[in-house]
Image 1: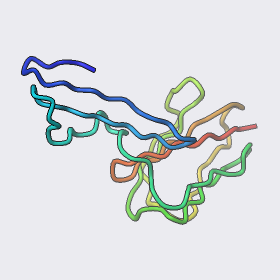
Image 2: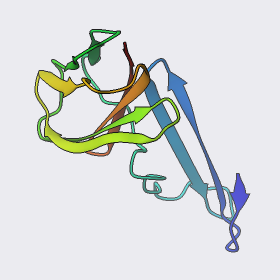
Image 3: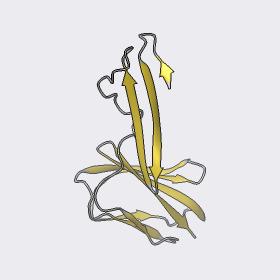
Amino acid sequence: MGELSSGSLVAGGFANQGIYFYPWLVKTDANGCIEAPCGPVNATAGPALPDTEPLLFPNPASGRFYLSWPGRPPGEARCTLLDAQGRVVWRGLRRTEALMEFEAGGLPKGLYFLEVVVEGRRWLGKASVQ
């Protein structure tokens, strides 16, 4: 929470519910009245992806893994694969499909995170590579 030079107050935070991320940001004027909604805090902020939960499998994976996503929004997704230290292993744009394939061959054994962002909404899943 912070106070701006105008006297406005800004507060923000987030809630995690399982694999879902729900950020929030509130701004009030000097009188405590809520002002127009603020934009996203960063490129990945926004409500979690709706509809049917995506499923990442097999887990653990060896050669490749799949994202099953029957309730996907149409369009293009920004996909990022991160290692357990948060370093980007792979990043790319993919058309959303009911079943999306990702190559895991050649990756060292360990824990990875697949982040999928569509229309400002974010989904994050965990995958283990053996």
